Image 1 (cartoon, helix red, strand yellow):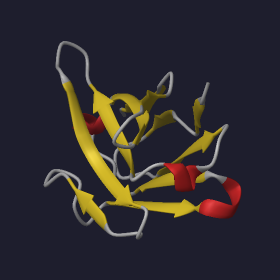
Image 2 (spheres, one colour):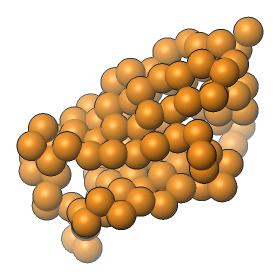
Image 3 (cartoon, one colour):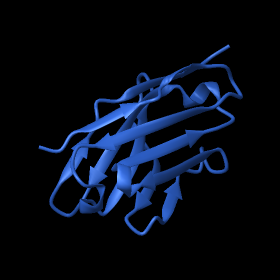
Image 4 (spheres, helix red, strand yellow):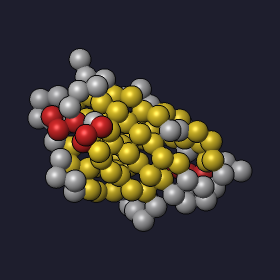
Length: 115
């Protein structure tokens, strides 16, 4: 059973930065795409960023220019660098690993942006 473990969440002032990490117990190369999603209180889960095995990336419009997704296959880890954070970025952030036959989620890490 593959496990995804997120870390790096916390509380930060508006304008601050955080770096989330997601480490996979198996091989990250097994999956076609890795994703970061988030869910704010009272809202549905939304896509934040994707990174494909090729290292191509895609971002939600709301985070373009502020967030950067990257991966280190040797460490089986994907990262989400979040800069210029806003209060509306407050949410639980989830890591996802997806292939044609498998789909795994982490337990989530809380990010709170507040003054």
